[in-house]
Image (tube, rainbow, N blue to C red):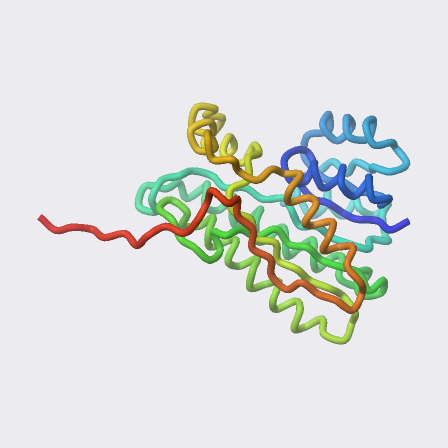
Length: 245
């Protein structure tokens, strides 16, 4: 039985990934800060299938202590991440910027670095969750988009460095997915979340989870470098024009 490590397994895409991989016969190590949600997943999927690892991905000491019990990881799904705030850069919170960088960039590369020796030994796979925000800027996206652009480029760099090791690396870059993402971004504003997703027929966490599972289950000789997904209802915006006078 292969083992996948899914960060941010307490909600959204990460939680859906845990269910999808379990249904496909994988063992899952799921990380997150909310112990109750991880325990509920263990109850649902079975304690022999889902193994909770309770820690904040930014806490390297807690991470290393929790993961010491799981030395053999075949696939790393770097899903944990967040956006904070919708303000333009000149009004944005510096603390929010730093939290996004610490979570979306620093924690991701730190965990990847820690697991690389084992992934190389097992000719495993790394699936990084980026975003269409890595490619298409929008007002208020500033640092969030920058962190996801980093994930995209880091994934390509890993592919280059890991050539010949047998390790596969993929950047998954979704558009609109209805999860708790907007609630976190707006500090729990359900009205804002409903307004964003209402009538848009967005993708679901399950949609992305099935894509991640498909990538992880491909033949060992095949690599998906980058995969961009959007709901049919979402497309590309026009350029902004600021008028004088």
